[in-house]
Length: 274
Length: 276
Image (cartoon, rainbow over all chains, first blue to last red; front, side, top):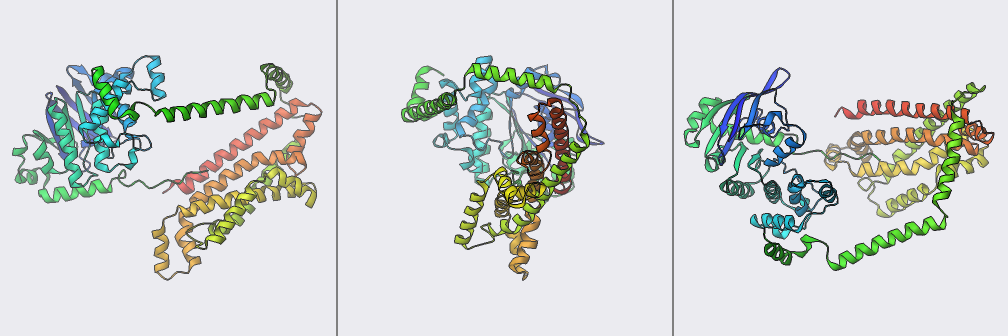
């Protein structure tokens, strides 16, 4: 059970997340929808503490996540794996190593950490990684460099990395926004499959149909606040218009545009100085 | 996961568990060759722990002589020398940059399509780069006599080729679309360079030039040792008569100067390039 209570994150006078309270029982697949700037990303980043909350509390199984520091914080991040819009794989490393990165925080002690620095993973971990890759039809790519893979493949590699963390919770921040429809489907199917294994999934989406199809529960955000929380069937087009003041088609067109315009989508290549 | 499963995966994809026997052998061979080379060169130069220890002792003596640093009686000469070195670096870098600019464009693949010309120009750059500024300084001291002019010419000559190569690479990384826009509005190839390429590469070039100015301030101190002007000669003379405290004073001034240039050029760079 993930409990979020009165959680806020302010940047200056503006609140990106404004007094959000949610209770998410284990095993749910929750879609978070909203227009760009509604605070969806910040909400997820607050949960794994990539962003620090201004006020409020996050509890997981009764444990106060907002108070964690150092090792305990790293352990919590291992427990709630994150999937990013831009995959965030290390492009120059091969797929297998990228997946094995999910094990790094499972290796304790000085020698194990030294081994990690030298890229030494145990046969068991390697077999685990291969099994994870095989599950999502990625086994043939295991020894390729990550940047040789398509976007859909890379996102599935990212899911494999997340699974290697053996998480209780997966936070997916617009996982399919940079993908074409066919790849988006394979990635969402993969997340649904992971969810059936009992892992809670919290996924940001801008495509309402996707949220309706895959998520048992939908949370809609507007200006940092939760404005709808319920079954996807209750989220009719009329309700969307009521919440956002625009039709569903407009909502999706706008969201798609915002995702394309986001700076992470098309980073200009920096020319290195000598 | 049970061992049998791990073995099954190992059989299915052995490369995921480590390099092939051949790869392993090659790695070993590489490692052995590297170690042999390392030990071989150490042996060739008779590097022994004892010699290094004695050397360190000698160095400690020098360091002790350096404290406290003292400007000596000729501190005006020292300031003048540092100013001269700075001026040499500035002038040398400017001359090199101005000459390297057209050469850089000529060496870029997307400007000059004649492969033979470009190839020979680039190889010429490579050849020039093989000669260090100190060698040029020795030659120029014979040609134009002792003094800062020889140093300026040495810095300029040595840097033209390097800057031209860097400029050419920056130009090749420039976006073609923007240049095409100029050509499509009827611009000549010179105008394409001026308005399509230069605005794109100017920040990169400026960054290189600022870095070279800083690095040349350091090399300008050395050029003085061979009589090409600047503070180097004064350092060399003081080392000869073992005035280590004055040497220390000059070194401290040099470090401050280079740090100041680094700081200023960093600010200039951020001001001109950072605003993108």
